[in-house]
Image (cartoon, rainbow, N blue to C red; front, side, top):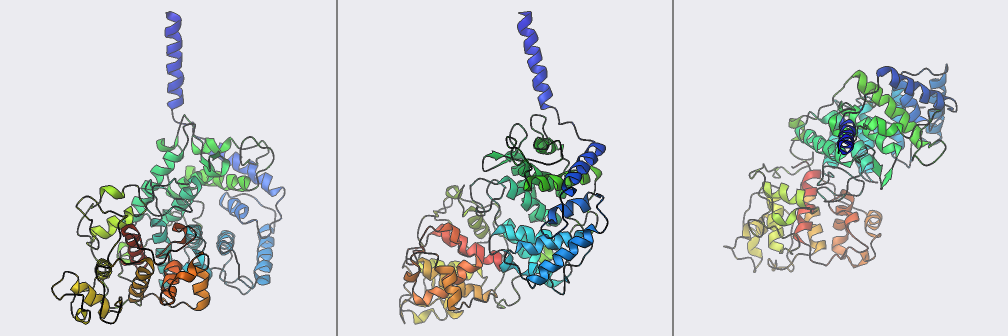
Length: 541
């Protein structure tokens, strides 16, 4: 019996020990780790184009480098930029070079006579391959607080920040393919990198809330043994990105949310460190992991700076710089070319939701629009996202969404729109502003089901009122529609509008399979997503 009690006590002590916080690495220990990995990298570093992340780590870690090394790197970059005439197919090249050049004190606006910084302001180009472009664009712009006080810089930052906020998943995390509000798995690396990009904007209330949710998700993504994984593979780089994110946010690595079984993110990453200072991608492989080593290197630097209370890895312009997109600036109504009658609607119903949209990709959209009185549920408790919608209902939603004043004048041209009907003012206003046409010269068909291509045309016309340039040439139309097998079935009158909707993100190609099905009835959940994306991109939410 005594033996049983002894082992029970021993087990209790072991469990208690596992629950204690990880032993924090001292500043001296971290300095030694940084120095060892720096020595490893320097042993084979040529200081040429392609060494950007090692350059960043060396500078931010205060590491000693050979005389003239950074000058040699700059000359290599200059040759590369001149050879390419300042134009790169891979848009993140602009960011990588900007960050490294900023780190060594060179101006990315004049590299051999070429400006490689300003292209980062091109939101369409930078996000053409997804949210990853927005993440890197923010890191690049904020590395030197570039264009921070200029209209173009503020507008680009707002666009990138809003894009990232709009992609936050239901669980608070992020992934490359997940849509805003979707009940889909978050990715450790992308969640951590998004938090790195959003960190300088946490003075904005909506960003602060998104960051808090993201941090909680990142904590939940940590395995019970303290490790981190991506695509079900425990690896070095995932832990490294978490370390950098915590550094950008000023969260200690021993924060209780990130210590599992006594293991912190730093402990989890050091499992992959080799005796020579290099890092492995996964622990059961041998040899330098390449990417794992340079990410492990700059993560060690980020951990050291975090411990010292210094600014994050990417804050090259000054200590603890915080860029602010003020609530007032963020709330500026609309795009520069917005029609004067288009208005932003205030929230009139806080916390409105419906039981049948939980876990659905349209949840955020439905709740945001319902809170402003733009859409209603089919009942008080159900939105019914899978139901179709009539042409009159869609006209009403678009008119409300743009804050236009309903007026029945003009609806009399349609014989099937009675003057006293609930929809006459909405049809009249939508027609007066050029948003809708009839299905014939004198028929609107208000109760007819609206299909996807009709919704795209009405939404594109609404976008023009919001200040968008919706014109698309034949090449652009083919570019955005030809990937779908049935694109030729889109009616000629609808092709330009539908292509614009895909280009602007109002329609998301990732949400379609092989076909657009343009003449298929559009569903209420789809409508909410289209209108929400239109208003978000038009700065009307």
